[in-house]
Length: 215
Image 1 (tube, one colour):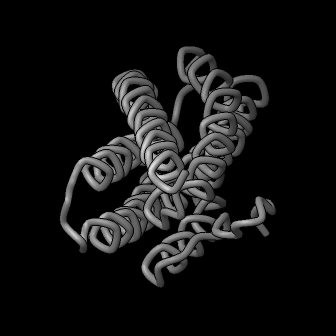
Image 2 (cartoon, helix red, strand yellow):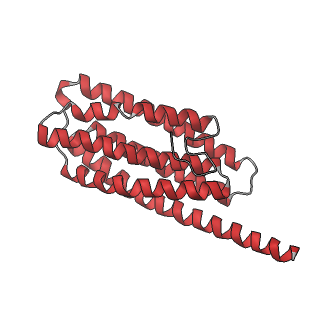
């Protein structure tokens, strides 16, 4: 009986790892699409909100790769390293958003233009990223992984960013308010800073094992 239970536990662990691996590969594929489309559209439209979103997508791509490495590595420190990498990547994102937003607001010759390709991307991301975040939180609770919880927080941030950036782009496209684009990017900073702090402390707002949502 004991051997049977052990085999069952091993099989369950393998199933969880396989599910995590598949989810992280999907995340990396979608993040690659987001990075390419967002940065291309950002350059064409001179949009800091899209550039910030593309930067977040690039960091989310690296974060997903770090978590994937964590579950493929036998090193005991892999969990800690992956979590801290996620935290520092969030700090890098915060610095990027602050610098790009201030530059756009201050530079009269670089006012953002409407980007309908960017709007379409943000609508898709606003649907996909919350689903990814929920699925990662479920698997993180099962695997008891702080790195995956932090990555779930990254996905949540990406979803929040999509909605906020979308608001800025819509105001710019249909309300002709070019300042709404960088202001939308600045509005993301409190979320990014909070999540960076949580990740570097080894937890995330989604770390409750009982499945409670973010606060």
